[in-house]
Structure formats: structure tokens, C-alpha cells
Amino acid sequence: MHKTSIRLFAVAAIAVVLVGWTTSSAVAQPATENAETAQSGSSIWEILTAGGPVGVLIVLLSIGAVALVVEHIMTIREHILMPPGLSDEVRKLLAEGKLAPAQQLCRHKPSLLSFVLEAGISEVDGGWQAIEKGMEDALADQSARLFRKIEYLSVIGNIAPMLGLLGTVIGMILAFREVAGTQGAARAADLAQGIYLALVTTVEGLVVAIPSLAAFAVFRNRVDQLVAEASYLAQHAFTPLKRARSAGAPPRGPMPPTPPPAGGR
View (cartoon, rainbow, N blue to C red):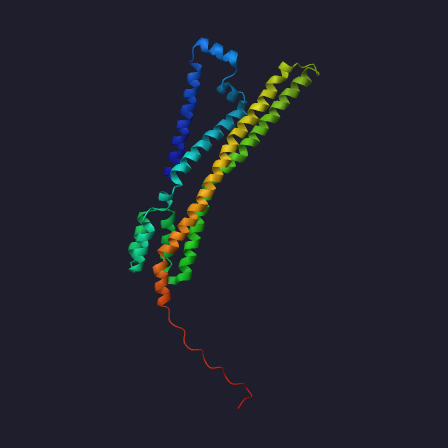
């Protein structure tokens, strides 16, 4: 978790630096370019800042969404959650009856799969049902952690349009305040600022929400796929132990004879 926080902080810092660099570059443009830009229309930065405090919050959410996407791309990978060869190595050690080395191997390669395998190994004394239950519980815990991790993208995707709607309402309030202040004699230019604020915040909220929800859907499907693969690999690793337990199970004895009826001879 500490390394994850460091990654998020680093990505967010890079994003802030890029935004600052873009801002400084726009300010440092020559006067002639500024004049041409003013004539051609507002720049992207001016449009972003036109949203006011609500727009700033939406921009911060966009930076957080980018940081989360980059972090998930780096951490939610098959070779990170399921180290190559771990399942086969544990399977080989279990087939040889080396439980302690198998457990040590899982501890030396911390991951989703190793956590599930170690949970199963720790329940060996309880029989196959205890092993299977331990692995199911461990897999459910790890999958819940991953889903909670990507859930922040869904939160951002739902909050951003709400903030955009808030900015829309504020902009309309400002526009109608101009109408009320002039007793209905407000010109279009007087209403433009409030309507401009309303439209900008709406667009900003949607621009942040749509990619965030799309990324959340992609990572959710990815987590489902990796969890299913981890479950298969865990079952595959314990197959020799399951067969050995099944082969070594004591055979059932013959059923005792049915006693004669109470009144029979």
C-alpha cells in the first residue's frame, strides 16, 4: 500500500507539473500570438478556468482519475498478480509432500495467487474441504481488495457529472440574477457569463466522467478474468494433494446387518 501511495503521488505530481507547464507556456507566448488567440477565441486553459471553483474541482478529479488509471495499468497485470511458474512449483512441492517449502515459496513471492495458495496450505491438516474453504475465502478477500481499489474510478465517474450539474445550476442562478437585477431588461451580454459557466462545467463533468467510467468497466472485467485464472491455478496446484488424500482415505466398511423385526422369530 505504501508503494501504491508513492506511485499515485508521483503520477499526480507529474500531472500537476504538466498542467503548470502548459499554463506557463500559454502565458509566455508573444504579444502578437496572444492577440491572434484573443481574436480567434478563448484558449483551452481559459475555458477550463471559466468554470470557477467547481471547474477547479473537476480538473482535480481528472488528475486523480489519470493517476488511478496509470497506477492500475502498472499493478493489475497477470505477471504481478500471478507470478509465472508459481503454481507449477507449488504443485511439484505438494506432490513431494514438502508443505513447509511450498509455504515459504508463497511468502517469498507475495501476490494474489501466493496468498490463495498459502491459505490452502495452512489448512492441510483439516482435510480437503478445509483447504478448499480456505482458498475460497482468501480468493474472495483478494478480489474484494482489487474491486475496492478500482471503485474510486467509478466514484469519480459519478461525482464529476454531479459537480458539472452543480456548476450548471450556479451559472443559471447567476444569469437569472442579472435578469432580476435589471428588472427584465438584461441584455444577452449580461446573461452570457452565467450561461457560459453553466455550459463549461457541464462539459468538464462529462469529459471526466465518461473516460473514468469506461476505464472502470475495463479494469472490472480485467479483475474478473484474473481472479478466475487465479482460482484455476490454485485448484491445479492442489490437484496432487487432493488425489493423495482421496487415495489414502480409509475405505468404508460393510454396512451392518439389518436387525430383525421386534416381533419376528
